[in-house]
Length: 198
Image (cartoon, rainbow, N blue to C red):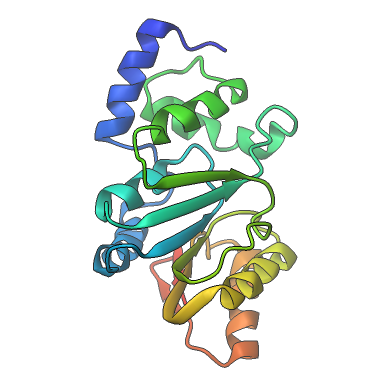
């Protein structure tokens, strides 16, 4: 690990005041509005934790909900999958020396002070938990995997709940959401070029 104990304090303070999020602010605000409206005790599911920036934003927006966030966390076994996001993390944290080897520690640092966040490691569809008020999909971006995630989410939400996601500007992601909306005969809303909602 390349994070010194002194730097850990600085990075931790920065992540508490300004969580490291990859989504554009406008897209994130679209999702946070719905999260703020959820009643106490609501469960939400985030598919794709990465280092937990969005997870923390969700917790800050509504401290009375429970957030289950799941990721494969294969930072060291498949670093190429995370390499594209590393420059953003380095810039946000003013730490150009960070590597994919540091991502797991950053996730822990960023989420550990929120008791309502429950982290899971594994496939997004492996939880077996039901009754979610909101599911946020931002995991694997292939059309097949997004479609499978959407079907999983559909089967574990309460009536009147939301399925939301990011990166609809990827053709594969858009195609999966559009196909799912047609199959289920539900309304698909695209906010900007990044956020989606069913």
